Amino acid sequence: MSENKIGNNLIGRPVIVRANVAGVHVGLLQEINGTSVILTNAYRLWRVYTRDKSGSVSDIAANGLKDKADHQIGARLNSVLIVNPPGLEIAEMTDDAYKSVSTFVSI
Image 1 (cartoon, one colour):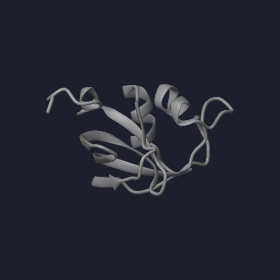
Image 2 (cartoon, helix red, strand yellow; image 1 turned 90 degrees about the vertical axis):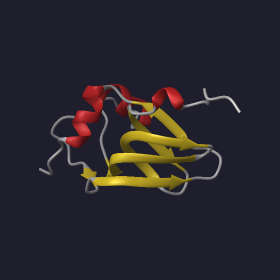
Image 3 (cartoon, one colour; image 1 turned 180 degrees about the vertical axis):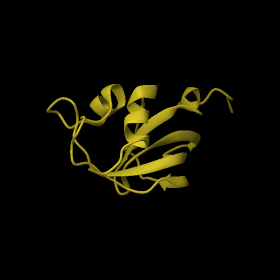
């Protein structure tokens, strides 16, 4: 089996994951195995607002969260294992986008 599996280039990088059942999570990708991932320094995004009107995972990955919005973000977890049926979306985040989540303080 090849050591260069799909997604391995994202190991150690901040990512946003949209899972069919588990919802949307942000964290540092530690491991990927098929449609299962382990994130460290992870947050669940319950309700967030994007900088554009799309509300998309892609916009959060590229631009971070909208400033001064009433986001609802879960507590930081040291790690989370997300086991998902086919359909897992993983998008690499910019460092600034990850920082907008990890430094968010409820208004």
